[in-house]
Length: 276
Image 1 (cartoon, helix red, strand yellow):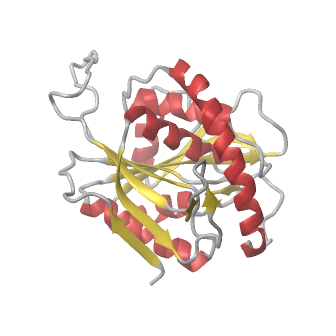
Image 2 (image 1 turned 90 degrees about the horizontal axis):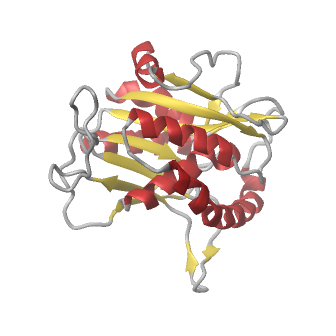
């Protein structure tokens, strides 16, 4: 067993029909940019730390000159009836009718078997926390920088695709646009049904370069999530706060690129593939 899970709080909260949003490193770090911003913006709390022997064999030195091992965290944001700042929709429904879980971190497993083990473990944890849906995020690597990135949606069923494309500027026709969705983003979406969990996957166009940050694509996905899940986020804040995220992310991306280069299979084609 290569997956180790550490509980970071004494009592696991009772969550209201939570949906998990995944944003781990991948092409353009699109998903990571979005989820890291949401975690900070919502002041989400750490619930679990997940480590694996298949994560890159490296460590970071933080701003305090202290070494830390790359990890993946599950965060939660609970919206109580009294604490939520609400607006009422035309249908009269309260915003944040469900709690949110975030899957975030600096790494994900590099080996195929470990990626499956990791994904199954995350889905099991989501189910234990009462979740029935997961939304995965990532990027579609293009050969040039897109001026106006498109967002595509796929999922575990036609119903989920319809649910998460209705009322937003999202493309449904992903078939033929990308190759396989590789890594945690693809596996979490594809394996979800085995655990009786429904999945939707948002992919934004970005530049296929290991040092390029898909901020525009991330912004497009954030706009979609902001509408579909009624977060009520001021999108102007994303532009201001992303500058600090960009500096730290670029530094870590370069470090991890060096550490993981030798571990990758080298079989990836130079086409529009997505790496979870």
